[in-house]
Image (cartoon, rainbow, N blue to C red; front, side, top):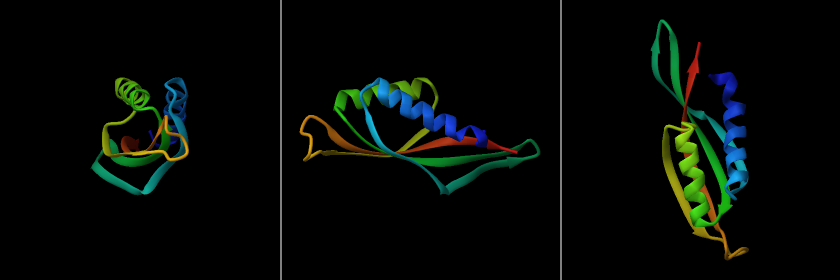
Length: 104
């Protein structure tokens, strides 16, 4: 639900810490929200979340796997991975994920 978005962000951050993914920014993109279905019971919307992080490639895979297992997101829109000039052991990662928001 919409009031649980902070909990979703906390879950992403917690799993990041657990799997060695250093999250630099975690930003809900409220302007990107799209109503998917609207009926008498309420509406279902998508909300994009931008995640900027640094991680070792395999740690990123374990992190994404855990998020998928816990049904934190329902779609990855974009994944960008680039070398980190400051830390050759890690990559700079930009994730754009969508979550499903149920509103009244």
